[in-house]
Image (cartoon, rainbow, N blue to C red; front, side):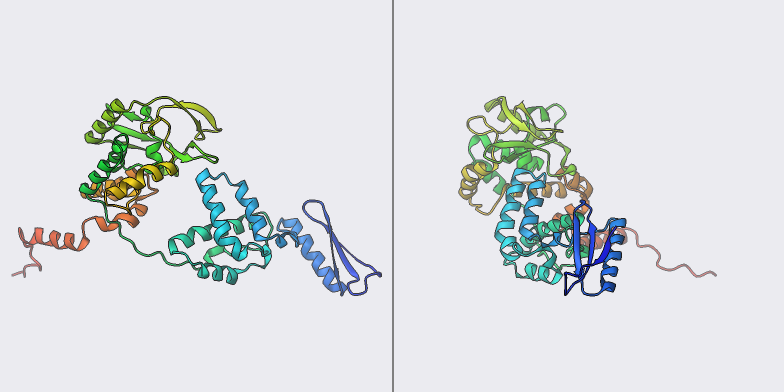
Length: 384
């Protein structure tokens, strides 16, 4: 319960409202008029009774302080932790880091987004961090409302980019350029479509050479402080069984014959709790150790793509090549999405829709196929 009492020692705000917040800490606020103090008392009691009370001083915490509390509490993977920390430090804190949370409104955030000197594809993930911090603060009753809620902030439109798949000659050039122990890795990504971390995480037991399938159940990611860690795939849709063409089976079988897998100890975080276990990865470095994305890109991929005359090509382009082969073969978007580990066919279409047969050409062909063989009667015959 809140109370209002007159304190004769206070000249400007003699009417003092006292109450205990949700943590049991006593609070007080003075008013010049009793009617204002009574009104405030009623509001406080109502908010406390229905569970919407917010400490007036909580919103004075700076965005930086709240963001650090949020960041360190998130179950982010090491690479995500590094990315979030970097974006906060480089783009967010210089603009709004030292401002109290309660003073940052929608206009401020719109100005922040509009003023970011970044591409639209980078602005969106940066603002996603800002949105997450405000949402967390609102849920924990640090601020009375969320200025990012209900799409209040307009984000820059993403440019329409069409994927241009690699040609077979380009894929073969990349396979020729990498050291021999990584040739089957390049051919495997081009022929089965795993993401880079997923391909690094394939163990011998994940491949069924008889049934010609590979199980995508995990990925390798750089660990904090060096080394790698076994993680779950990107999302729940990434768990999948991918059928392998005979050419991929032959390449991987030959690779394991030339570069046998050996047991190495790894930290596996895919279960309920992290455990150390032994694993036999199909693709390893020259010392037989699991592949680290950072060192692999610097020491193997970047020099190899330059040698192949494809300096702007990433390993993800091999995945695009795989998708283009499935589309060329006539597989529908739902099947292609399942093979790639996409959330749904809509996501696949956003990336690859332009690779499917042109609807205008198909429409013309559909009409020509009918009318050239059998032109139907376009109106009923008159009765006689």
